[in-house]
Image (cartoon, rainbow, N blue to C red; front, side, top):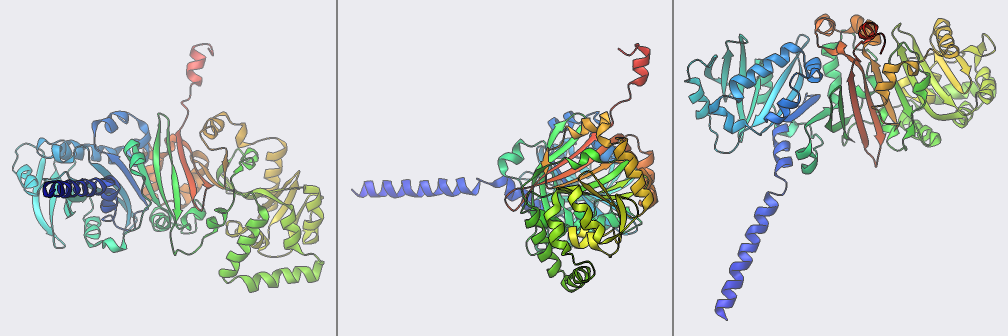
Length: 534
């Protein structure tokens, strides 16, 4: 009997031990990913993660997708660094198969630089780096240095003629950069202040070729470095959005496509895009009547316009705008007898958009239920110019009726075409769109756009789009000269991409997010002429 009891106890202890080990190792990848990302400075807007194995490098070998974004010089530097460090026999076994995180950080004086963060397998010590430093003919000059109280290394590459700074953060986690300032910032990073990025489930992470983490609230500091004009409208609604995305790469040979979930940061101030998370996705149709000259646009879709208007009203009240709003609409009521909010809400359909063209024309295109019914309502609050056009008599109406994205239309001119209300800040812009609409000069009539559009989701609640060629005049005006020069000269570079899109689909208090960029379609007209068009 005693033997049976002892045997049972031993088996119980063994079972408990196995269970502890099992649960301890059940989720190791996400724990490690979280630990590594907590060492990355909180001002990182974008973090790109991939696995350091030959499979990843083979897939993107001679592929323009990543080279065009990162730049040929930067990609060459990273590849040289890999060849000299990670593939060195002394280090290779410790870093092979480890995930590498490349984060983008704004620094002083309009500088943006990369930080590389990774971990090693167990058993690695800094003595291995000291061993590497003693090797001959590596093209590397390695010297140890105390950097802000941490043991670090300065690695000079004779090939690159540049210094790379490397520091051991903690628990076999290493951070490296060509920027000493960024390394110092990394050392001073308190894990408690790190951004709580959304992480991918282990199975999804293990099956993913690469991942992209986005902290939307840190896009503004990044844009301030990239642009000389702080008020640039490009991507503005997203730059004010307190969202965190974890997106996985869906590989295509001619396009970068990422998809995944976006969460809203807890306790963050509510932003305009938050208003669309309580809606169901709608079919994107408004894009079919965008001008062929569209540089960038943002489209909003609501399944329940009245719910959206209620949420917008509450948001504006919390923002301290209630008194100004009430005063405006009381004035309209007194002067016209019109309850404008109620009347407009009844006419609002499911989509509305703001479009900027390559000629700096700015248009609001709003789908309504019945243009004929809307006309007398709008005529009551405006000065008529023609049968279908006029100018609002009251300031900031688009802002209070549709929200922050429409704030650029203070006292706009308007035009009602079919079931669309079109707003602009000048009569010339209205006339330009009138010509576009009736002569069918739409983006959707262009074959290359339709090829791009086929990559996108059919439904969404927020959809941002940019055409790189059409955006070039604004980039030339507002982008920092150094960054614009890189945009214009680098080949391959950003100009090799045709367009980019970011779509958000509301799903259970989160957004399912799709990001897509595709390369320009090769010009085959010369080939067709040589072959008789066959």
